[in-house]
Image 1 (cartoon, helix red, strand yellow):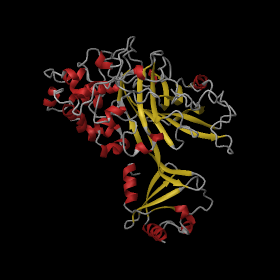
Image 2 (cartoon, rainbow over the protein chains, first blue to last red):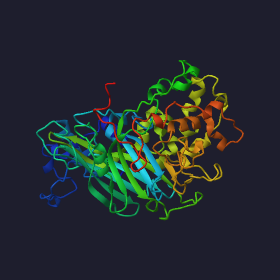
Image 3 (tube, chains in turn yellow, brown):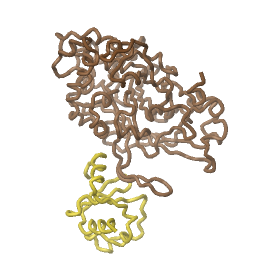
Image 4 (spheres, chains in turn brown, purple):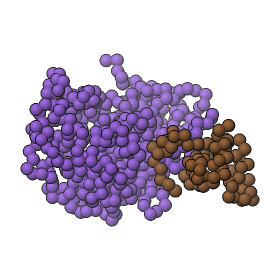
Length: 89
Length: 456
């Protein structure tokens, strides 16, 4: 997990990096991450709190997920582009 | 101010803004150390109807380094939860609050205490510990002292804790100091002179929110012992406090929700470090950094801006300081490494060469029977910068140190200016509005909103 200072975070957001609340994006729940087969999705999973996805780099598909008290680095170019498209609507 | 509103961004987030940190061997229980960290600066006691409280969304921590690497070996964490009894009233209380579970007290706050020791799973020491209410006035809080006493709790694990409102114990002539560095008793010598005058304590009628914990010394030292030799290299601990918020905040219709890891937004070790040493554009970054990384700020200690300003603001008063063109190894020792053995007879607080702003306390030094508010500068080895007691005059001590009073520790050929041992903002512990206590949590009872401000 990358250590990111609060200022880096705010600076990145201000620079126009797309940050969206996954649960708030229409259709996202049905959009499976590209490298995961559909049968890996567990429809019974409950979110204990909000999950926020921040697209750091659209080109590489670098996404940071914020969930609970964790920050998870994740790479998925297809999902990153879907999020960006959804955010641009 | 010690660290009140000391950085542009944290000044807009008072519940996470650490104002003062104290660490001292408890005078009434010398086998313990008392650790105090304050938040929510400059509270006007009458600030209702939504009286002051800790942030439920803030992680408050007091860290102790006991092996010299400037990283926490022991951390005490405090998390708060607010409970509202009656959702149908705008009132904080609907009658006198006479007990901590009084049905008339509508908005109560509780907290948990967790101890995290490096290499071990964090352990919850207590949960649902009650805070006292704010001190509102004779109708709402007729026996505030009783409520505060009830909220002073000894935990099964041996620590004493208190979290809630107290009187501000830090004294400073804020109005004068930030008017171009004026010190009223000496302002006749200022570049823009006015007649000399008595100092004014700007915090005399204000409150803060205090988190205090009293811990056996044997819980804090590296080897689990209570040292009695000040020269013992394991006798010094480094202390700092921090406040952290989750990285992401979502403002939903019904509530705000945080997610992601906690990230530090405020920290404090030595008083006035961020305030006076660090340039404005770096102050919020300093708050977000760990002490172990303070090397990046060391040049501001070696060549402090204030040392260059004093001779300009007070022409002719500091000629020796003005002529001093050298790194301030004395300030580096006081603030960043601890004072090595051999400089002050019977004392050392050296924790190694790693540069870190920590409040260093040599726990082998017993409490003083006749303390000096000037601490080490006053010949009192139990006072700041050997830890910090609630009454220590840290403004005068640091002013004098920066003015050159401590430079002879590292260069015996330097003669401090006469003013270096006299410079002061003219306020002292006698100017604090509520008296300090001689027992835990040592800070005075908070001013009540009914009485302060007064009609007189």
